Image (cartoon, protein in one colour):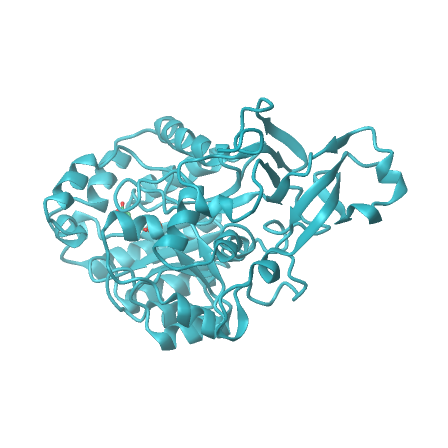
Length: 435
Ligand code: NIG
Ligand code: FE
């Protein structure tokens, strides 16, 4: 018995036929070719059973039984992509840092503000002071924005608690965001900044992370991965390595905020530990990128932070292509470096600021974002067996998702096989009223 069948669709499957181990970036140094990356089936059909994709393929091949389904939905020729995945966020946090925005516009740098006790530590104070319910409420409002744009999976980090109780509180709050329509992956980011009371004994804080926090997170099954911020204003490579070793001991995957503001050898370090992803990478060196390719570590590019901090050095996208590093894109939604709640805007910025092709950008919020979360077998592509997470769009061309600015052409979102949102006919955008 099937739950529903979707016909008359243009499918962007992101199933390139290369097998799940191949990076979904252009091979051989070519810019990603749209057809290679998108894996289009036109016209196509999807059959959904028990929340999974039971069958997908050309409409002409749809088995007769499915054609007689009671729950037959006509997609009206619309494009369908996998549900979008925001694979790097700090959605759970207290307060905001609008005042720092003004300071930076006056010339203060992100690092100067952090050294003066602002930056991440300002949000730590606000987050410690917020109770779990308040954190859930704030994060839910931001998550609603992402979901309205077709996000069906989101990663959420801790890292604004920096003491055991507050870090666990953040992770519990992140867990409460999960529910019908949204899958949540959690990353423990205790090694995000050194709290003020450990300023002169930074290794002691790392010991607290390693000996107390990570075991507590693992025991409570509160996170899927351990993240760290490897940077002059945060943790040294040796300290990050200690954190990663503890993560491995407890069976947790690792990820790294790597080489965002300076070359710390973060890309190579992440690769050495088989990290799911290394994120930011503006200052990553070429050898590190080659190591990432060999390790299958995904590069998560965060144009919202690059833009907000008015950085001038872009991640080496050409070198990533050359080495075959899979590239993902995410909002990095956080109150400091990227107060962004639009993944569609990140598609545009990934193309305009970093030079991705629209197809690469889309692979970055679907198949490659799933890889960055260790969810490649679960979501991010339209293939039989994966979760039935997909979005119907009122667009003529998938590239429109990256090209338009401030436009949300979602027509409907299906998550775990259930229709989450159907906008009023004609209310969703340019398919009905060309402009
Ligand atoms: O991904 N780089 C470090 N962490 C965050 C910023 C957090 C903050 O400024 O509050 C980032 O950019
Ligand atoms: Fe971040």
